[in-house]
Length: 392
Image 1: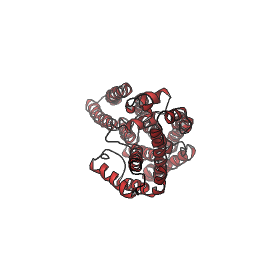
Image 2: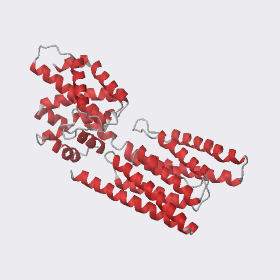
Image 3: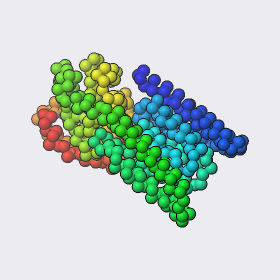
């Protein structure tokens, strides 16, 4: 609870600082370069509006954003890059790298919003033509699209940087070279410097990001995904019913996550440790975070388990929905078997009943799962009918 409050306070502070820094810095640079009150006021109004939109987007996604300090630092780096770009020739500032770093530390929606503001600023402050805006924005958008879904298994550095370089060259040729039908020394040198700086910064930043964010918990997931891990062995000794519920739920969750292309380690662990707090108290959801933080579990896993709490009636992420549905299916079938060991259970009918109940309660109204994905999940549950016989 205290951790959540600190995080919320952190994002409130970050939001205020983003608006103040954006309006203050861009207004100061505008006045220094132009000395025009009307232009300065225009830029301040534009930036207060744009930064306000960014803060609102961050508020919408605050539950999935992780580190307010890192997000603020990366945003300020991009903002100062815009200010610095106003004193440099067009296309020299490596703005793309700052936008991509911000996106990786926040998410795709926040990244696009912040980067659009960066591109607007570098155009307004330097009084550049619209082709400068289009060049920066489209190349940055492409870079973000390349990295919008990353995991330890498919995170690459060299190949995406080659793709980004090729797109940059093609777009620059289309927007500038073909516009004037001639090449000058500056038209070659300036974008070449900008591209080199982008590649240089991103090569370092992506390596650091991969090492410290993407794969930092790889070994930890490997350790806690083992049924012989100390907490799971303790759970087995203390409460076998909850232990076997966790084991069967993890199997089902893992299968469905694999079919949907989601993080299987995260989902499987979410199923294993959804009730791990029961080792300390019957009201397990009050002790889950305390026990997991004590054992240094990955932050994403702690957030997922909290999202699967019975106190949370509206999960927001696909991973949480899979864990919750798997738990409900296993729990329901197990209960029926316990009550009537010899009865023949229509598993597909039972799954339809659970899905129908969830839809009536509107539990998924705030979730990012699509209708097609939800139908696939329902289909996958029904395909596991042979497995449910092992619950007897």
